[in-house]
Image 1 (spheres, rainbow, N blue to C red):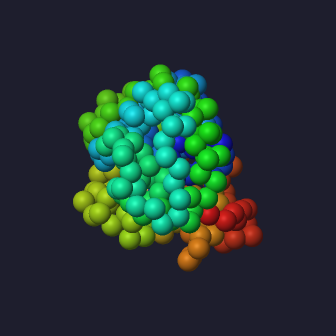
Image 2: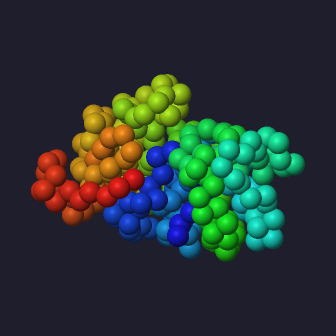
Length: 241
């Protein structure tokens, strides 16, 4: 399982539907939980995120040992993790596990946060080696050098849920679209079909708890999705989120 921590908008259930990297280096300018890079972890990976908490969590995991992770207290439903004797790094990490799919630090452990906790922590601990060689920095996509690489660009949805309200309110999608088109190498841009800032192609329908969305991509390489119609039944599969 490619899983280090839970984060809103992660591609954990659909990462296999995205094109494989064609370059030795992967760059994720909106890193989040970096499910694409985790799938191809052996590559030269550069993660970039504006949210300092996300960057700090990744740095913590890079330094952590299996013993460190397995020694963290068990999360149980309803627990307030602020009552635990944790370092700031440990708190940030566990806060993303406490509420599954959160976009910010949480403190009350949800049902999903406590479910299969022990098994998930064992999995995380056993996969720490995958990220030791990665480079992870705090910053904006605009600051990145243009280089030949596989660019996996997964920004906040243009029309996303409330969880993305703060992270996308100042995002200039027109400028982002122009930036995406000018990257060297292979470019994969993630969105859903509500978005209008690039010509996105549908790849799969996600059935969430409250509503359905159709995940889509823009890429500068030909894919099997180029001729897929928007309507389900014309090649767009459906899975549960």
